[in-house]
Image (tube, rainbow, N blue to C red):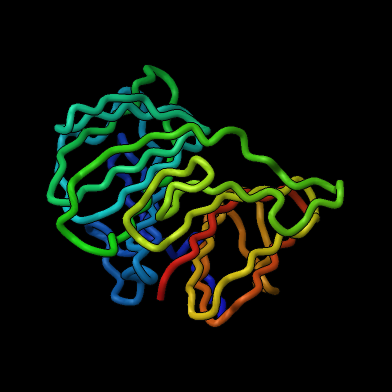
Length: 241
């Protein structure tokens, strides 16, 4: 089963300094049919205006992963962490028993484009924590004959494998890209769920076509094939049911 979530059906908020598209119910956007997928609770695509951002606020019991697509984001929290996150890096904040943080665009003239992801942890009440890792350039598949695992980049995992950030849930977040029609494949274990979020371009997943901004819920599939006639860039979530 693959259920398309069209980009135009997402929730949208324009706060002037922030434009935000919500794949699932968030803040003032509520749809009882779009409350998440397995432990995946939030995918927000945000564009933050230069010099603007989210003032100090709190979270509890959530794994928050941020992927910067363009620009930069300056992080501060009450745990003493302070850093600037840029493309090629992944930020993970475990809210746990409680954390307060702020996130700002430090540029005076360049917007910041990002994806913020919330994943419910396997158990509540853990110690809060922060992690930021350099993942490196995304290795795009080309017509060299590469297939299967080529082109996949692990961003987050329960064990921090392959220099990914460590999340407190049996979930994996991967990013993939291709510059042409070379297919990518992914084996999904029986009983697992998946979710695809397209960043750019378009991709066909087991016969279902997704464009930029589209998402798709996936269940009862064990072999996923991703093909396209042009370049694509997307996230894949491998999730427990």
